[in-house]
Image (cartoon, rainbow, N blue to C red; front, side):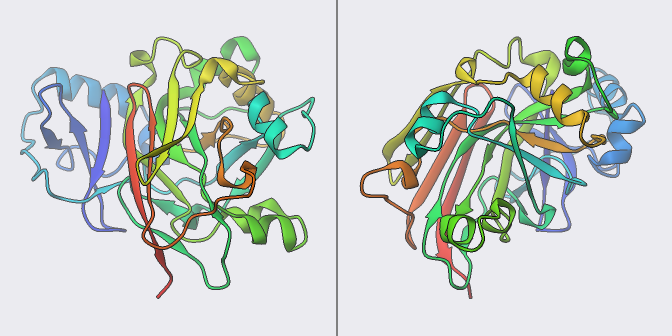
Length: 284
């Protein structure tokens, strides 16, 4: 299944993207795709509802805004330098363990929403990533059971203000957490439809120019290891998001660096999971 949420920011309703391209409104049966939904068998109930023909669900206007495919999570956990080529382009060495940082959940944004340069920002950067959504509580999960904790996968862009990240005390989180810095979507593809999360191509274009072109099989730490590893440091709740890292080609890694400017168009995609499209604007 492909889960979507539609409507104005903060007022999104749950829906399902059908194979024929229609989006069906699921709000008559389900309140939202949030922690409670995933924790209480919501995915299974949704699958039954879809199999029965989505009774009572009307077709959604395709022109309506799409929000992120799950409600704002309790936490967004990100993995840094998880592709060798990206670690090397930064020249900071290859970490032995996954490098973890957080993005504030207030950065949560839709797949076609604008990305806003915050006041004082001057080094906006992009990172296309495979993201996963946790489907059940995970604490000290063994690696061989980690994928059972995943509800589904989506396309994610980890936007960064590099000056805030690198030049303001070296604290990654404050360079990663501005409003609009965590777009995800356009839908959540359930785990049963992703045969191998380590066999997906991911890419990013800026103003039509290819910038990133990677393969999830090149992750230093694969999805199952990440879920297990992170769950040993914090309890992962249903609906939580993990962004799994980015391949080479980010603006900061170029010589000279090429940061985003107002008016730029950033397109990110993961094979089979859809594309994000963000126009860069200044804060107003």
